[in-house]
Image (cartoon, rainbow, N blue to C red; front, side, top):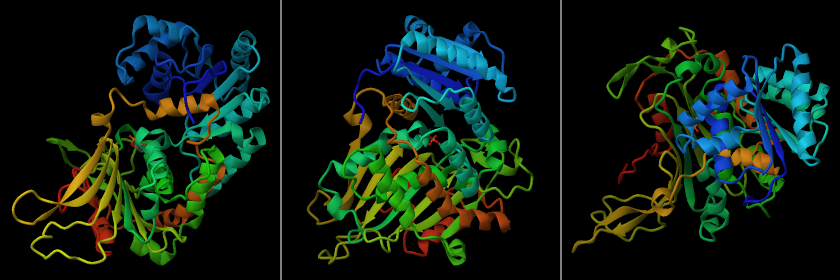
Length: 504
Ligand code: BG6
């Protein structure tokens, strides 16, 4: 559990040091940790890549990036200079492992200077096909032998399917111990997602209701207005199920579905989460037919501008079968959740950007109010809005003021903006700090990743082998394919969106 503590000297080695992730997320996160006093007293950042840079030109490139992408705005010159004083660039080409010698020398220089206990964090912000070669080079050059002080952070996607995830886990386990491996799912670092644990387990109020006796269904919906943009090449080999559901949405589902851990220990929490995945009902061919929907966007208009369809995006096959939308109905087969559907939905080029978890409670056991009074009747709902709005709303019935007895659903709202001052940290700040602190709670364990792949593999295999006959099947700026509405309507429900209107 994090509190501001003195950290051991730390050397960050960033593979993909000239890449997009470093520019947009990692460098701004490290800088913000620095200005807020969370970086260790002694640290160094070594960026690696194939492009030629000097230390100075690298610092300038990252300063530009931080100016552009940091939540704290443009850097303050003196703070930046201080932060960047131990920043270096070390050209490294995985195709020529000999270049790792320079990297080793750079790391050892700081290890010597900072003394024993200096930790080295290797961050793999590169395409997944480079993970194995980098891991092997780190081993060959004996950079990872100190189990207590060397760690590897791996970006998603962790594997392309169950088999490749297993292969990667096996390879990593020959080089690192599990406690050295930090598999990123950046959703777990989001402030509102971390709050799920606090909300569920620091309040006595919810736990007695948090089960099949009081909840009638759960929705997890992560919708995006953006299309694939210039990531078409990557996305073609991925699709919405791999890109979002296998990781981010299933992690959210685990946080809703897990049993109470006995303490805040990383493995205790991860055990409770993996139990959820293991309890999930495997998909039969019939389930895939009736409980899953895929979609792909066609061109349309967004805010007065025409946007291309998925098949017209850069790097995308003109006859692509890749889904940009997925909706799936899951079940958790255990005592707590038996019979309660969990509907997950995600897609690109939808009508709204928002990540919502909605818990709908069962109706009252007996209605004492007449139909005129309950015209706007709505079962109680707990709506956890992860982004962009950060809030938790409890929707309850209340009497509308007036001489007539009329009921209306109202929101009891906990809104971050109205409650706290200042910015919330970005997910990557939390995750990088945790990696420095050696706290794996918000990182994926190998068995978790495999369990999630195992669950989605039957859907992926079916979708890959049976080409969709109606793609593209939803226009940009819509709520996705009609079949997704039908999937949930068959059970008598509908998808919830923000803003929540009465009787939405
Ligand atoms: C990434 C996916 O993991 O998450 C992207 O690869 C997606 O396709 C992104 O857009 C969403 O993250 P966020 O934090 O913007 O909700």
